[in-house]
Image 1 (cartoon, rainbow, N blue to C red):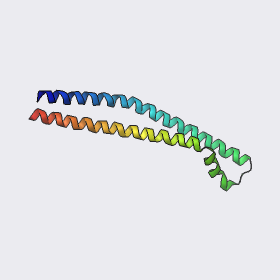
Image 2 (cartoon, one colour; image 1 turned 30 degrees about the horizontal axis):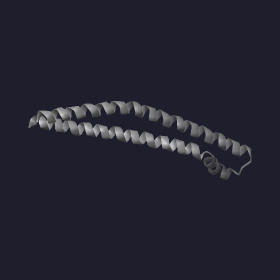
Image 3 (spheres, rainbow, N blue to C red; image 1 turned 60 degrees about the horizontal axis):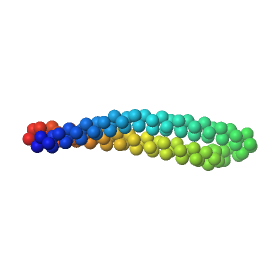
Image 4 (cartoon, helix red, strand yellow; image 1 turned 60 degrees about the vertical axis):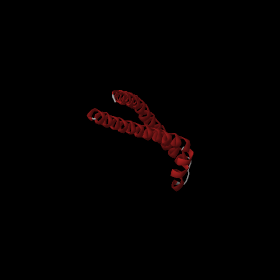
Amino acid sequence: MALDMVNVAKEIYEAAHRLRKSSDILFSLAKEYAETEQIYRQALAKEKVKLREAGMTVSLIDDVAKGNTAKLKYDRDLAEFKFTAGKEKARALQCEISALQSIYRRQDEI
């Protein structure tokens, strides 16, 4: 029984360590997302101005500009999904730690 508690305590420690590391990774993913959003928005605005100056019909400018900057939007969306996945991973680690702590407390009572 004591060995089980040692294993559970070790699991809690390792999960907490992974959670701390995930916080640093999550920050870099958030930064990447913000930067790709900025790049996409700036490029989209420049493209709209360029198309307007070229005399394109106003009703087409938005769609054409979005089509011309689709790669940047893809990069932005990918960064967003990576950030969201990172947040979900951190939440999963928190749940894992919580479950392990519950097991640890229950084993102590037995």
